[in-house]
Amino acid sequence: MRFKQLDNKMRVFETASDLCVLPEMYMVARLDGRSFTRLTKDVCQFKAPFDVRFRDFMTATAKSLMNCGFRVLYAYTESDEISLLLDRDERHFGRKLRKYVSTLAGEASAQFSLQLGQAASFDCRISQLPNIELVVDYFRWRCEDAARNALNAWCYWTLRQEGCSARQATRRLLGLSVRDKNELLLQRGINYNSLPSWQKRGVGLYWETFEKTSFNPILNQTVAARRRRIYIDYYLPRKEEYAELLRSLVLPQPTQGA
Image 1 (cartoon, rainbow, N blue to C red):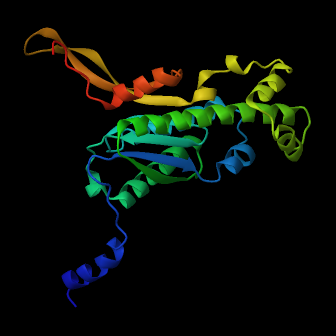
Image 2 (image 1 turned 45 degrees about the vertical axis):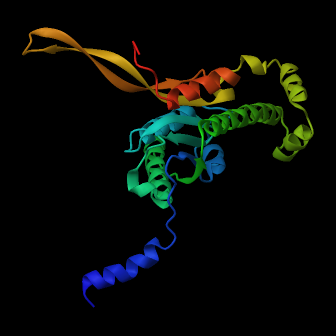
Image 3 (image 1 turned 180 degrees about the horizontal axis):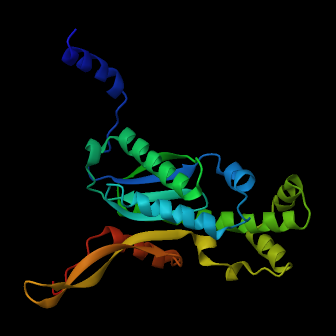
């Protein structure tokens, strides 16, 4: 059997499960760290409930994902997860899901491992969203998840530092309302509302334009050019202000004078 015949025969099995994202659908990829609870608490012993080093490793990984060849409009990270909003017109790999999932998971795993100095891995899943309002809802959902996780984490680790076992701390928090948990912290001198914004709302990354000046030797003058760079936002707005920020990153902006 000639190579071409063999190649055609075997590629059927390799591509049999290919699924492609329909045109004009937004893709949001969510990457989660695999076994990161053990990695962060037992192996690397990051500070609980939050460690700036871990935040910076996740932020650097998210930034690298925005530069790995896809048209990423927005990246968001909280805890051990990263979410990426791809441009609606992204066309790489013919929009084959398995290609996006494998490439993004591999890129995140490699970049985070380099930051950490040892092996770590991520999995990846992709949501297909038909309109911008569902995109907004997705990222508001992840922000709300960040807030819930932050409150629970602060309560849990505060109790652990008082001598409670993991089981005791978990049982103490069962059935407590958000108000009860806030009160638990206040009684110990911790005002949840005064905690750093990035702990409660996560970190957003998006493109911004800026002017860069340089010297043109041919014209013998200084010229200005518009460039793009990634802005890291540690103080994401809340509620409708956050929704408006997301819409502004997705929808085309009117040109000046239009």
